[in-house]
Length: 228
Ligand code: ADP
Ligand code: MG
Image (cartoon, rainbow, N blue to C red; front, side, top):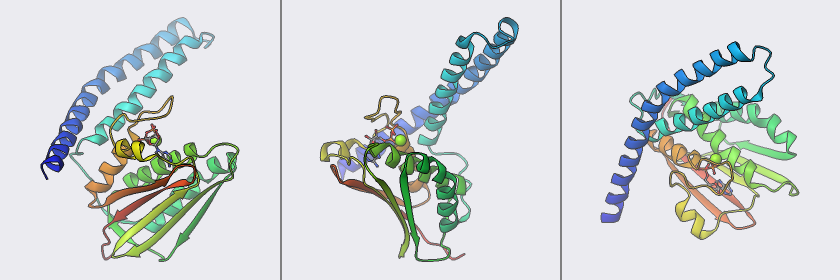
């Protein structure tokens, strides 16, 4: 219990620190980006010098990371609203399908119910699904026939399971999976999963993971059902 208490406090502190720092970084960053654009207009109207776009791309990367920091803290405005989980899952898969096709990976989905409502912003739910699906994609080696299986079911709560046949996660890695900045990728941020879990918990849900090395990984999202 004491450990749980300390972990909860640690999480809240990290969230607060991250969100406040992010807020302070965002404004000067926007201004820096604006001035780089001005410099490019003044000194490189024809866009021959790649340095300007490199600087702007790097600024955009920082903005992206900082944006995720903001999500680690408790958002002041949750914008939770009744959202049809089935519709958002279908929409997100449709929207990501092309990307999976390009990598010759198969998305298989099944739905037991025509619609299932929870209290969560549709945008956040979409972001949750994108984060998990993106990780699944990145976990499948090129030479493997990638299959990602998505199921939406009802067992008191709404259960979304996302299973991949990727490299899997070792017992040791599993312990650190939701720590901010934990990543095994060269260009990873290690913010996807902590942000994802935070968004799910703020909607009253839970995020769990099961994995076997070399066989694959299953993420289980549990969200409270509401009457539509
Ligand atoms: P990032 O994707 O930037 O590394 P995440 O928080 O999204 O950060 O994920 C953290 C780490 O968890 C990843 O670097 C990876 O090692 C591991 N991981 C997440 N999802 C999967 C998955 N489906 N299969 C294998 N490893 C995963
Ligand atoms: Mg990720």
